Length: 205
Image (cartoon, rainbow, N blue to C red):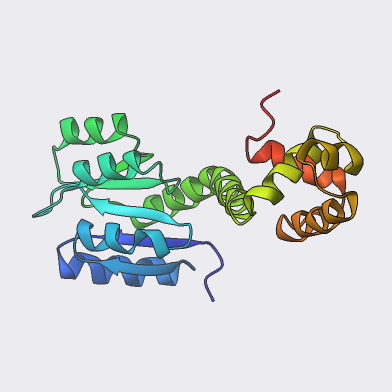
């Protein structure tokens, strides 16, 4: 069972993929291998958080283009770029595009594993926050238009009676909507509902 986190290796060189797979699994990481960047990007929506280790020079989509696309998707995955000897200008460009670090091949195994551990440690809190925010946004999206109105009334501090008057429906019906809102938003109290609304950006104040 991987304990240190997950690593996604992208390299068109099969021998390099195999040696990285062996090295990282031995160091306690979970590893998934990709032989090109497009295959990784196609799989990305379904992947759990992890560190990407990608070669910079690959046929098709190279490491630089991969960084641009990951940035455009606002991905929280940290990316380490492997460069050939003397590829410093490319490595610098990769850093500007958001790579956390770069390694020149051939590299020291311990240095690579230390860099991955550090990258995961630094990026994980942001990734978890992002996942929570997306989850809350999905909960809000599951509300019916009327439930959303009731939620907006509740977080504005209105009583059931006032919300009922506002939308010209009975307080009893509002109670039903309110119960639905609490269930769908997975909130156990009004204060929790307000906190969730803040995370979802419904309270701009």
